[in-house]
Structure formats: C-alpha cells, structure tokens
Image 1: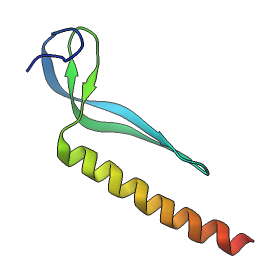
Image 2: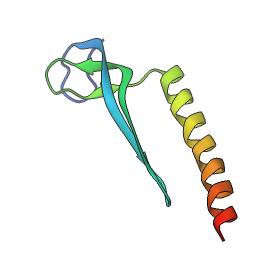
Image 3: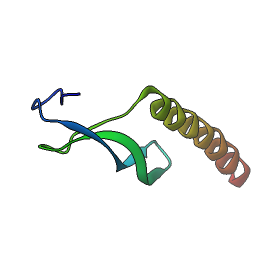
Length: 71
C-alpha cells in the first residue's frame, strides 16, 4: 500500500488520535492504523473509524446527560 500524500510505503502500526467537541477533548494514545514510513501520515481502516465515531457519539450523549444534571 502506498501513502496518498508522498507515495511512501504504508506499514501496520499505531498512532495517537484526538477528537474535540464543544464540551470535551479526548485522546486515544494508540489506535491501529496504516502509517507511512516516509511522512508518518496515518490511514485508518473502516473498522477503526467506526469505533471512533461510536465512541464520540456515546461521549456526546454522556456529556449532555452530565451537563444537563448540573444545571
């Protein structure tokens, strides 16, 4: 597999990933990904993207529940 940005070789590895929304910032230290050996650009597989999206949606719901109870 070639990197979409620099055409370098992509290898399996892990990378940190963060997501920010209105009321929070979350950091995952080690998400499986394809990583370019030249430029370091990560490429996530569909399964990882789906897991991240589900986690963010759940945190959104939990944040709404938490902050609405504080009001």
